Length: 271
Image 1 (cartoon, rainbow, N blue to C red):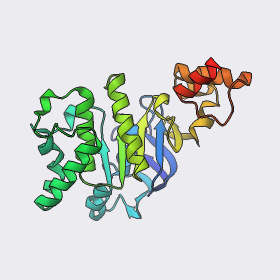
Image 2: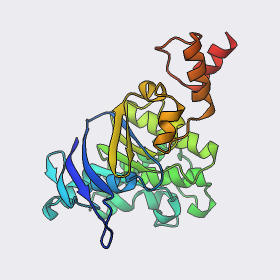
Image 3: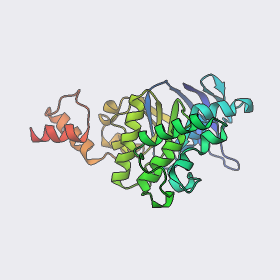
Image 4: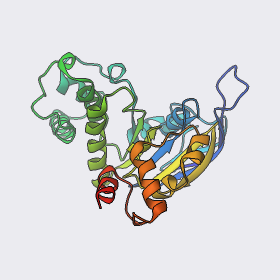
C-alpha cells in the first residue's frame, strides 16, 4: 500500500528533523498503529501518507505513486483519506448528509452514486437517521463519526486517523474505535496515529516513533510484553489493564497467547 524509504523531513526554519531516516511499509488490509509522545513525528509521518507533506530526503510511495510528483497528488488523496483530531475543523456543511456528500460532490460524481455512498458511510458510522440533523446538534463523538463518514464517502482503500480520538470522552473514543474495527474487518487499510496504548489492542501491527526515528515495530502483544519502563522511555504510559496483564503474565496466571484486552485481563484476575 505505502512504502517509506529513508524519509527525512524538516520544517522550514528548524534545525531538528521531524522525521529522520524512516523506513516503513504499510501493507494493504492491515491495521497499523503508530505510537509516540507529543512531538515525536507521528502527525508529520501521517501527512506524508496522503502527500500533504513530501520528504526532504528519501522516497514515499503510495500504491507505487511518488508523493513528490505533483501529478500524483489527486490520485494519492483519493486513495488515502485523513481524519484529524478536531472534528469541528473538518466539517464544512450545516446538515449531516450534506457534509458527508461534500467530497463526492467535488469529485463530480453522479447524484445516484453520491446518494449510495453517503447512505453507506453514515450507516457504517452509526449515523443512520441523522441525515437531516443540523451538525451543531451532534455530540463530540458523533461529529468525529461524521468526519469519518465524510472520508469514507470517497471510498478510499486506506484511512489515516491522526489522533482522531484525542478530544473525545471515553464513550466517544469507544464509538470511533468500534467504527474503525468494523472498517478493518471489511478489508480497509487503517493507519492510526495515537499515544493511547489501550487503542492498539486489536491492531495488526504497532510502530513506535520517537524523536523522528522509528524505534520499534511488532505485534501489540509483544509491545505490552516490553514492560512499563521500556514504554516510558518512549514517552508511552501503560493503561491500568496492561500493567495488570503484565503482573498476571509474570506470575504465570495468564496464558501468553491471550490478547491483553480489558475483558481477558478481568477474567484472568477472577480466575
